Image (cartoon, rainbow, N blue to C red; front, side, top):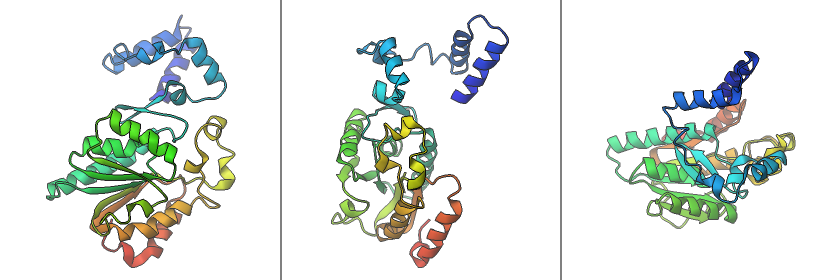
Amino acid sequence: MLDRLAEIYEAFRRQGIADPLRETLRLADLVSGGALRHADTSLLSKGLDPESIAGERASGRPLEYILGVAPFLGELLECREGALIPREETELLTLTCIDFIEREREAGIARPKIIELGTGSGNIAVLLALKAEGAEIYASDISEEAVGIAASNVERCGVSGSVTLLSGDMFEPMRGRELEGTVDLVVCNPPYIPSTSVDRLDPQIIEHEPRIALDAGAYGLDIFQRLIKGAPEFLRPGGMIAFEIGAGQEKLVSRLLKKAGDSYHSVR
């Protein structure tokens, strides 16, 4: 949507519209059913004047970190430098998981068990808890700072009864909780950028977002390998593994799944 609005702004500007920015904002308000005019702007009155926002933005700091919030599937979540900024692409992963959980519910599984690895700000875990009522979610991150941010979002959205937050590496925090062979869904939005490519990212990403959430080793596959190897221990027959991958990684990830062989014959 933002790219489309930018195109409309440029068209207004080329046509000589007196105030192309205001006209673009009016158009956005109209097509959103008036959502823009009714937006909560209280954040802008909390010691953040336009000049300070502009100054921080000029330095390259992302708006989400400046304001301390980021939207995700209609929820406004706390967002700080210790965790990756929730992105629109990850909404598709989350919606795919919600759809799977709903089908499980129709099949008679009233309280599905979910493991999320690398929870970051907790955006996936929180939205699954909100959209899939009754789910039992175990979300972990190797970064204790990220777990703290996730805890704030769990409390903010009132889902502490559904989400258990853990700190540790990959599946290690899940052991000793009688989860082996019982989990309906394992979900992960892993780092998938090769180490040699991380430093070529937009400076506002690499200079502000946690490198550990971006760098996935020499070929961008480190976490995929560990995720695919470890998930069958916890998934029940018929369970699903879901994760985000980078552009062009489809064949490599397919090979990893094929190599896992029999471990994935009974899961999706």
